[in-house]
Length: 420
Image (cartoon, one colour):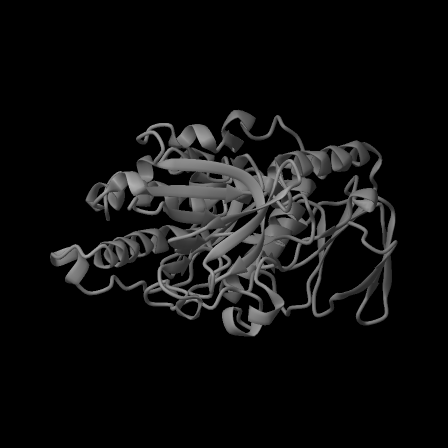
C-alpha cells in the first residue's frame, strides 16, 4: 500500500508564513523518514510578499523606497529546495475543517478547492481598516489604493488621520514632511503648513507601548511637521460611509464626526487604527472553540500549538494569541514552531531519538518596551529591550528604509540558515 501524501500546509505568505516554510524545509525535512511523502504547501492570497512596515512611506511615492526590494515574488524564494518538497498556491483560505483535517481555499481563478493537511501552520496575519497599509487582498489591490491616494494628493489641503499607534504616527509624519517640510531647529512647530494634518487618538497619549516621555517627544516631532494631535476622543462616524476604507471613497472629501460631537472636514481621511485578524476561514460553529474574543487563533503561548484543533496544528504571527502583534515576536516564534513541529512529526513517524523524545521548545514573549517609530524621513522615537533610543538610532535601524535592509535574507530564507 502506498504511503499517503502528507501535506504540511502553511496558510499565509508574509513574515510568519514564509519564515515558517523556510525553517521547516531547512531544519525539519532533512530528519524525516520517507521525505518524498511530505510536502510544504503554502496558500497565500497574494503572489508577492511586501515590507508591510514601510507602507506609511511607500504609499506616497514609488521613489521614496526601493520598489525592487519592497515587493518580492514568493514562489522563486523556494526554488532552492528539492523538487516537489514545496508547492505554492495563490488563493484565499475560506474554511478550516479541523475534524476532517482539510482546508478549503478559493484559488486566484475563482474556483473553490480542498486540500487535506497532515500538519497545519496558520500564519494569515491581519488586515488594516485602510487598504493602503497591508495586503488585505493582494498586491494589485494594494497598488491600486496607492494610485488613488496619490492622484488625490496634489490638490489636498487637509488630512485627518485616525489612530495613535505606530502606523498613524508614521503616516502623519511621512505626509507632514513630504507635503509641508520641517520647521527650523529653533521652532517648536511649523507655522502655516501647506496642508493641515490632524491626528486624532482616543488615548491620553500617542504610542501606548512606549513610555509617556517618548510619546511626548513624538508629539513634539509631529508639530514640527505641521501635524496637530487631538487626544481623548475617537472618530464616531464618517460621511460618506466607508471613506478611507473602501476603494470608491478611498481619498474623497470627508466629514468626520468625533465622539465628543465635534465635526471636522478633510479632503482625505485615513483610518490608521486597529486591525482585523484574518480568521474568516474559521467556521461559525468553531469560532467559540478556536478563536479568542478578539478574533485571534487560540494558541498555546508556550508551544505555539493550536491544541483545540487537533494534533500538529500551530499558529504564529499576528493571528496567533501567543504574543502581541510585532515583527520581533514573529522572528522569535519561528524557531519554537520549527522545533516543536519537527518533534511532533518525528514522534508520529515512530522515529526514536533525542529530538522526538525530548521536551518541547518553549516560547517566551519578550515584554520589555520595544518599538521603533520613524517620524518623517530623518527622525523618530523608540525603545529596544526597555531602553530608550536616540532619534538617530531609530533612523539608522528603521527610519532610513523601514527595514528593507533586513528583508532580503528573510524572504530567501538565509535568516533561517541556522537552527537557532
